[in-house]
Length: 369
Image 1 (cartoon, rainbow, N blue to C red):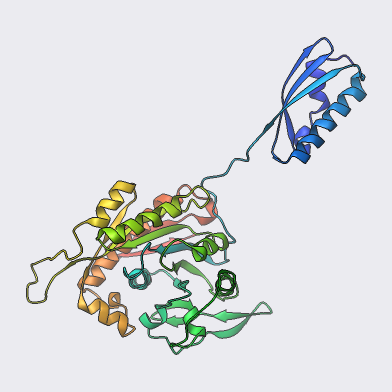
Image 2 (cartoon, rainbow, N blue to C red):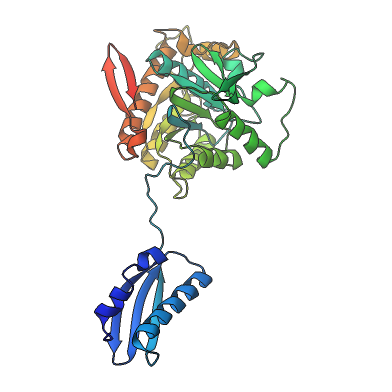
């Protein structure tokens, strides 16, 4: 066989199955220069491929050929829309609710969004992932409840506690109210994985994950374990909270994480005294989270004022959104609708198996997978 570019390329026409690709061949008499690309960056892999190419050429065209191989490492293309984690059968959308700072009302917002989604006709669950400070059981008046064991296809699984139509799992169900959870990261991750994958969640349109404050090990564990469809950041208007909220947005936008930020919710936006219903007092600053959303080019989902009934409702285990046609119910419904609207936009770029279709009928939305 004559030494030629065409014959050398044909010699390796199945090279892709051996993890390298011939990019170019140049021949000067007995000198052969070959450009290849491989997707394995290790030195051992590169040497093995180069040796294989040289051996095949000399065997076919003789050993009096000088062969030079230029190797380029081809980085695998990461699909920016790839959903990470192992999906849970029956759960259409997983929404992470986060805050950079503690005490901004993240759990309150989570519980009220869950109730609003449920009132719109969605099936909803909450995973309380705040291992060291679970508060969802208090907000749904189920602190004394315990998940039951059910048999699903021959396997024992936890049945989530249900309250006001919301399915709930929390580490708070497995600890005493005065017991501190003093766990290292691996122990917390194991507990979370059990609540995620050893639970009989059934069919859910939304699973809301109430994350702990900050950007740490629990967050990474959740993002690795579950295909998180989108995230919500909760903040109060003052600068000290906004600084941490900015970090929360940055975490989800990291290339290695790449979870869409559906928007920012501003809690404790202003205070209106009952005796002065037309007055608004911006105790923690005005439009802080709204301006942050604009700066970071993420949607602003809405604001929640300081209302005594919200605090009372949470303390008594009766989310304020359950009070229909109230101010907080209407505000949370607007925030929830904005979130769903952003989710629909985001899901246009996600794999079809996670796509959302929203139809509006008599003021209620419905999700079809």
